[in-house]
Image (cartoon, rainbow over all chains, first blue to last red; front, side, top):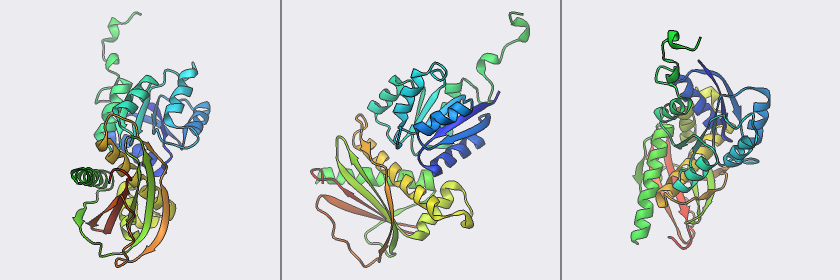
Length: 143
Length: 153
């Protein structure tokens, strides 16, 4: 199983770093989309299906917390997991993001294993990239 | 005085963390820079502590940091990419620093500004009140951080 990832950060350099880290981490990424702010992220999502969003907080036009609110309001997007990657790592901000629906939080600067670990946790996949729930006997299914 | 010492320590730690983790650059504190600066980025922060921070460095160091961060070859290192990396460097240093100052409360950080400057090593800009300067030596030249925080420094 591989996943479509949307990276949202106003820094092109940071988007490139995150994309590279995900690629080399072993996480099974299918397609990677990028956006420089929340507005662009929503526009991307109208064109492309996304399985997980990795977003900064501090961005012009629409910041990460505003993006979270917009996603929660839309039944089509409200269950897509969002991971916040930000320099703003205060406990108050992390709680604000969690209340807004974020499923994970990574503080910058991060190590590659930080992103890999949170991605795997949030998506429910093991180190081998497989869903933990999928690892059962096919004969034990309903049909 | 103890407060300034503690703030210096927190800022120094934030600088080491960011330069090493994100840019693979190792810095050593020095008293005075022996190279000039051609690049500066600035940011303001507000919250439990208010102030501004800027970083200055040489073109050479900025290029090394950019290449390291993005794993680029020399020919790929263009001005817009350098500006982006330098601004992100300052964003992370400031963010890491304010997290150390007060890990529980939110700080607001502005989006950093980037500019090219012409600053010789023997120029000593007048330091504003309520500020201090930290200078580091790296493989690519000097790296300077100035923080201004009225009421705190």
